[in-house]
Amino acid sequence: MLSKNRIKYIRSLEMKKYRKAEKAFLAEGNKLVNDLLGHFSCKLLIATAQWLEAHPLLLAQETIEVSAEELARASLLKTPQEVLAVFELPSYTYDDSLPGHSLCLALDDVQDPGNLGTIIRIADWFGIEDIFCSQGTADAFNPKTVQATMGALARVKLHYCDLKEFIRVQTERNVPVFGTFLDGKNIYSQELSAQGVIVMGNEGNGVCKEIEALVSQKLLIPNYPQGKDTSESLNVAVATAIVCAEFRRRLS
Image: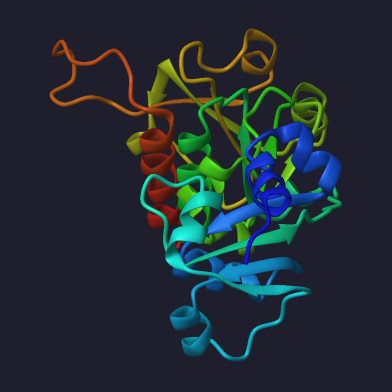
């Protein structure tokens, strides 16, 4: 049975300050929880009897069997599923030389949790293991972000840093820094690289001027037919998918 305090604890993880204080994050749903169980330490697993019976070999510090009604009281989802889990927040270290030998993403104040989660999922699909984020970027462990990743958080590491300084260091090392801009050059006709950084900008403002000045190659995803009046820009997650697909298609 779930106590009121336990429910309060679980629901508090919707807020960043409590995730930070408890060093924990929440995940819900069969696929997501299963994907994360093998990669993060599970502090608490709450599930229905039916779910637990189907998953007997689980490693969690504490497991609680509940009814569907009890689970619904703790869940943050509109349609609660059979299981939720509280995982320990990971702590990652990174080497800022990573972009010199692999392709990485950099996110400049991407603020929507759903967009961030989708970008993490896209990075996972295209084999990009590291994403460097400005401090103004949404929290990767926001429950909405976690749900949108569909388990990709198990394979993609996010590093929050002084993004301007990080990009400046890459430029000094002659590491290619790509970015998408409305005044960029057609991505389909430009030379791309298997190493470097792809910078994606804020939903409303794009890449900030300070980082734009450090970008070595400005790219454009052209509309079709070119010159026709269309939407002003693409959603940042959609644009990320198109750019990553072109890099991998060209360089595979």
